[in-house]
Every structure is written in structure tokens, then in C-alpha cells.
Image (cartoon, rainbow over all chains, first blue to last red; front, side, top):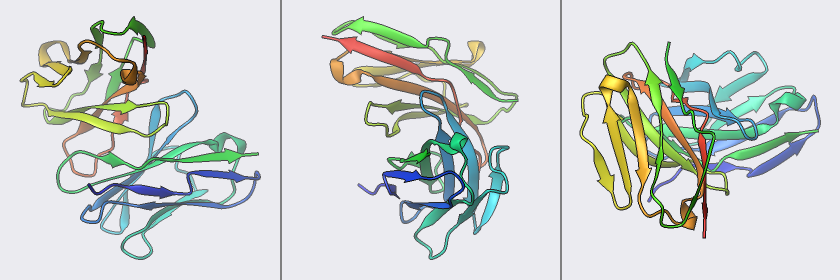
Length: 112
Length: 115
């Protein structure tokens, strides 16, 4: 069964460094999302992406964040200058024209 | 505004007990979708069920059942004869009818099933 994959599973970085989180959505899916979950809290929407552009972004998704679909298969989230409060689990999700979003296993980002 | 409330923060049961996880939602849309996801200790989010606003039929899948009631804006989830493997955090989520719409999650209910 096809699934969303994410790499790395765990990323440790120093405050102020740039990180890129990678996702490979399910191949026939057209809609892509990033969510984050601070430890012990609920899952929060960051950004949605369709037709090579951002559809919607949350207040969390400020100028430090960007997304890209560089090659038709990968979907990346870049944080330009990480802060301590960016430490969280980041989930990628995708769906086709049906409405169920399928999530990747997540990338745990730890900012020191 | 849209909102999902899961008032039960944590529930503990003994194996084989039945347990119901509550979910109350708020939306002004007439077309919307409701979801339940399971987050086991390993951390991934596992899709369990999707319901659209026009389909109030209850659903049963093995030991799992869902009760959708528009009159009370609730979408409750019952596990019958719980097992230790059911221990997880369960999230209820809501999204609007457009394809690009985000999921709005509740705060989750942590279920612990003891042997």
C-alpha cells in the first residue's frame, strides 16, 4: 500500500541554523500539507500546497518557513533560521481528489 | 470559526472494557468532513475514519464504532472490548468541504488500556 515517507526521522540542529525536512507524498496525490505537533500538544496546520503554490498558511508559517516541490516527487519544508520553539514533530500529509489526508511518520526536529 | 473539542484529556481502562471517546465540533459550514486519527506511542498518525456532513449513518469496523450526531455536533468513537494495543492518543479532526482545506484537530484523548 502506498504511503507518505519523510526524512530524516530525527533532526538535531543548533539555533539559527537552516533545516530542510523532506517528504515524498503518495504518487498520485495532488494536495500537500505540513503540520507540526509540539510535544504533548495537538497537531497544528502550517501550510497547504496545490498546483505548485501555497493554498493557505497559518500564522505559524512566517517568513522563516518556505515550502517547495522541486522535482515532482519531493515536497520540502525549509526553516531558514531555527528557534528553540521550532522543536516539534513535523508531519507531511497528502491526498488525491478524495478527502482523506494521509500522514507521513513525521520528522522530530530538536533545536538546541 | 471552526473548532474541535475533546474534553477527555486522558482515559484509563482495563482490558476488555468498552470505552467511548467524545468529540464535539463547531462549524458554520453545511459541507464538512470529520475524521478520527490514532497516534500510537511510536508517533505516527494513523487514519481511522472519515465522515461527511451528509452521512449520519453510524459505522462499525470490528471493535470500533462511530456515532455521528449533527443535532449535538458530536462524532464519538467507541472501542468495544479494549485491548492493550489500543493504547494511544486519539485525535478528532474537522475540515471544510474544499479540497485544499486543512484539518483542524482537537487536543486529543490519551487512552491507556491496562492488562
